[in-house]
Length: 271
Length: 330
Image (cartoon, rainbow over all chains, first blue to last red; front, side, top):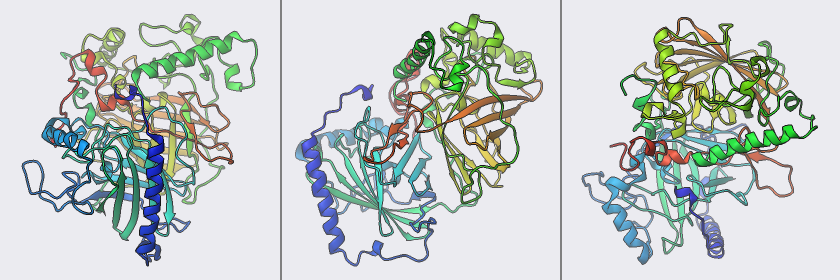
């Protein structure tokens, strides 16, 4: 079982990178002044405490899940200019071969094909709806695909000091910077991919997400990906999430990992 | 939940803790535990006082809903045995199984009065067939689906591990150990009847202290327990979550109507209690970890609950379900 693996962390390195990442985020914030997210938007839903209320059902229209990088149309992916700032992912030379192997075997090895948990950020831009439930203390994301429920804690708590084993969806701690929700996600396992093209990460993955309204029915979602084992430097992706406004739209559970055996139930004679 | 092996270990640990506790003469502080017969396991009681439906006099949420958020778990036993909850699973009788029946928790079936599910003869035969093969499953259909980390569905989710209730305007959300239910509190129509789901499709509303939920679209695949009790995909289920305004207890009552399987509608009762920071996390009823907030009072939070078997079929290895390779083509 994958989860029996011992987790080995290069703690010193990881912490150092986190500090650099935090600093670069701060500089970005300063240089981008006036930061659009810091200006109060008028026409967006808000909780009683004034923070933006992302409650609702969301889904990307982007092609991000097919391949984060720019690509022509091919048998298993529509064309796309990509969603990564700068175009291509800054793989370390030694990590690129794994990515190439993943790409070659993607029709068999993509975890999505087994309905496994997709991880973060992939669960956000996988092309299926997910529902956000928001309280002051936390934000719950329930994804239609597979069994994926993530809680983003916004109550000022830190990442857990000690967990039994790393998480599929990571541990999410969020805070507000104006009208932007900034989420620090750590404690990942290395079982998930970033897209159908085999882009991947290690257990050292560290994601910083930013969620903000473009308008009341559109969220801009961006993520800074840092993973020193796989990437030479942190990189950014950005997609839009659209509110599902179809009549009576609701999530329809899609626990497709049960498909290989669900035909045996309930009791059926002759099987 | 991590692996099936660890889950089994947790059950054993609970049982052993109970046995150890019963070997000690005292520790009667917890009223519930004081009612537990010897060897019945940690925090499972054999008797309880039902919660009455009525007015809600407790705390309300901003949107007017009774505030029932938090961690909850059932009082009397897990899903080993539906109608004799403390007797143990088929083929593995518990220590209490030899005691007079009245010394164990009552059947979860409260109507009819005999405590039995009123199956048609054909449906009873199917349930008995599963029960007889449970401990030695030689066909895939004899593997309890929850062993593969299928969602526990209705009603078994309420007799599996502890779970969390979160409330929002227009919704009550149930986060189970295996699966999630979103109960919509509106008048929108149910999903089309062709759609069948492990956790069914729910519409609810509040009547005083009671959350009344109309539940349809169940796929009938999540058995009620290791005894193989079941409903079909045609079942109509009316669930009533009756909360004590003191916030400490609630009763789950569900009436199953399914003429193809039962000779008459029948009603189940599953008592539950709240767990708070005053309780010790126990890996079963109250699966939480302490939030990281130094210098502040204890706050427990739920760690990620993703069944490892969701990410690689566990039970499948035993009886020919593919272990690897694509499951979907989309």
